[in-house]
Image (cartoon, rainbow, N blue to C red; front, side, top):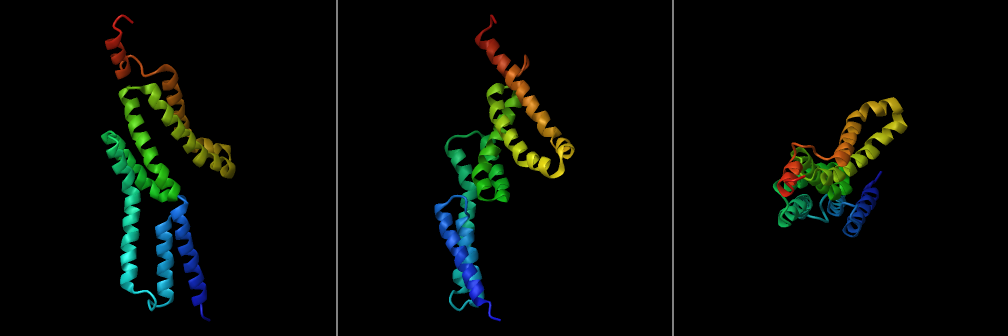
Length: 197
């Protein structure tokens, strides 16, 4: 039985998906198009497309993926982000690769916010302000990882797995309400600005 028609249709669908990926940010355009071209070339036994062309396009696809990963880092540097913000952006971009196109878009921001705001909370500098993005990150983490577990495995399994998430959330709510405390940089800066308080 000849499966070349099936492979050609699959290749066409993937190449069309790659074209749509240029228009829709949620589709990984270059990898889809490259997969379609590779399937087509293999199905046609490289008679229509040279292996050199496939190799050159594979290198271009790889460079496009690398630009997608490192562009947020370079943008963070260009906009004078702190060193921790740049590191967080890089870590978020790498971790975001595992969550598809949405992860590549959101990952650098989440990584930068977690590292930068976490450092501010540890230092006790702008603690209340830094707690807000961290609360948003924790809310998204609970909704995306623990709520599905509640539906699948029940309350006690979810409660067991979510104990760290809830502890961090409640700690952040406490810091949002009370502030950093007397030994923080916030208190030190307030004492310098207003010595009579």
